[in-house]
Length: 397
Ligand SMILES: *Cc1c(COP(=O)(O)O)cnc(C)c1O
Image (cartoon, rainbow, N blue to C red; front, side, top):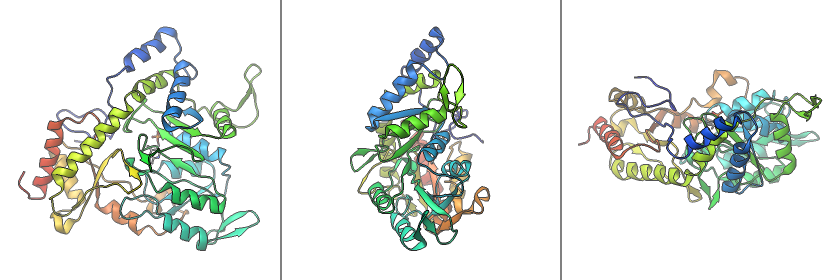
């Protein structure tokens, strides 16, 4: 059984993470169809931006066609230019690194910390202080000769990275922070919503994220000039809408009213979604705690995690088999589990990028496996997953 994360459940199987539709989505989409407001302007786009800004406590939000495009435009607004370097964690989905490359800039992959898999602020400090030298044109990476222009930390798997430590370094070196919050809408860092500015933060509403618009994204910021620039760039940099005057090369990266309508309905239930994800995590934690060789995800002292994907680590010698063998045996029972991403310092797509460490990312990739954690996961389905994991370990089910 093969299926993509984010796709509907295979017959009788248990998918990794699929959308939860069932609120006002139909009604709001019907409004778009009834009124003819289906495209990239409309009341739902405006409301979706306002609602999301309200939830994260940002002054401005700009709806974008997807999370990758949101990061791309946020980096442009932050002033990243061709040939610059941007710090990206070594362990993350590839999108933020790709967005850096769209600009003709380069990622520099800094390792993650071992406990929560988030960008390692100490490694980052070491890199900025010892791996770089101040120069007339900015902070120069001694290894590559490129100028480090921005930090792009990722809040991975629903768990916030250590933002205060990273923001302090950003201030020390005068660098803007573009937060990739695409996996962590609804999470909190020291009580504050993830994505709360900050400089710029980006969200995704892809099909496997905690809430979805089919596909979609958002940039949030408190700075009006940045918000205006992101909006301008996302609408083909149109300066005069009547005479079609464009003052630079822009993009067609706006979200449609139909997608935003779905997003508004989904956003109404965000708190319930987060609660459900946390309840799923609690049950896994309770019922897998005694299985030898499993390291279960926790929360840093600063974190209120959504456990977007419940990702365990498998110590093969203690568990009796490795993460991939566990994935295989779950798959045979129709249960979709997935490893994390290839660490980016190993990605053929990103050859030529610099790296600072990477051993921790390698180790996490070898040992990690995400278990089904859709908002709609039923008690009976979760029971099946738990029993299957325990059986795989040779424990009584
Ligand atoms: C999903 C994701 C993105 C991109 O979002 P899309 O909406 O799929 O373009 C970016 N960064 C990370 C870490 C993601 O998981």
